[in-house]
Length: 420
Image: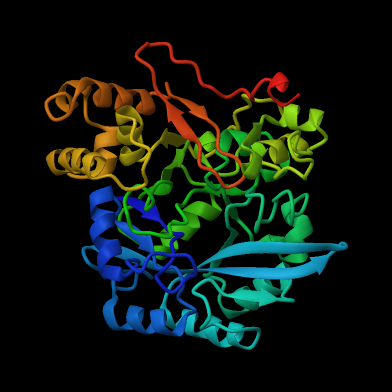
């Protein structure tokens, strides 16, 4: 059975999330997306935990649950904030657990270290990353804990402003319990393959969705091929980097992510790393420090050239949400547009779910439902023939389509003369 899984989401009880992040809306939109397994997120919050216990039904002894026609895995993201090496460290960690008994023990342990009711993603001040892992793994060896969005500028294990220069530096003697990292929207597997210190870690991809809409939910995900849905099989396939069971990840192009390039949003300055370094990482317009992007951070740590392919790595595919494709072709610069959603919904209604549209439907079939420009754009995304204006400093990147067959990616920075 193929499992299309997005483990990293949040409920309506996390800060800056949609009030529609409830089990019913998440289930409905997961099926429209083509997902059949979601992480619950936020299980340490007492209100969300109560809802989960009331509604989720155990799926036998698999360690998973069912509700709304999909499977669920108990997950939570937690934030640790502390000082180490004369620097403030802010690291997010994603925790996967196989059942409520284990989750209850985690809640009991973490409640002694900080408030669990103020945010679905709890923040623990003064709790070091190795200490968190030691506490969690002391509860059960079946738990899996991984660094969230490992490269993101803020709040990550390798981030430019609060991260470390290796996974081992962060987790120290508890690194033995870390088997995977989450790539995040602004990096993809080839970027991670460039650094040999990451070879031993499986690369996972999730959406970190704060709203249930299908252009957020499952925009990055993991695909497993298992005899039956099982928490234990999933975790084991990650630990062993087993390509027979962990089939592939789906990633957005990293240029789409909000922190791919280095830049300064207030001044509309976006720079490729080599151009940012020419300016000593100072904004050429206002003189403030630039926000260091993921691409530049990878360049700082990489010990392999671009294009290196890691032998034995889990494969990946690059896609974009259907809404983003349609809105770009239509020239609609809105987060929500009835015209775009109607076109999106027509395709999903005809072909079952969004992932089927993006991955499988042939162009001649697409042309029966939508116009040639949209059909062409879907195929170009599927084949990797789409350019981008790269995201930077909290601004999403934008796809660039043209009508030619040999579209070149717009990955270069603005000319230096633009800032002189």
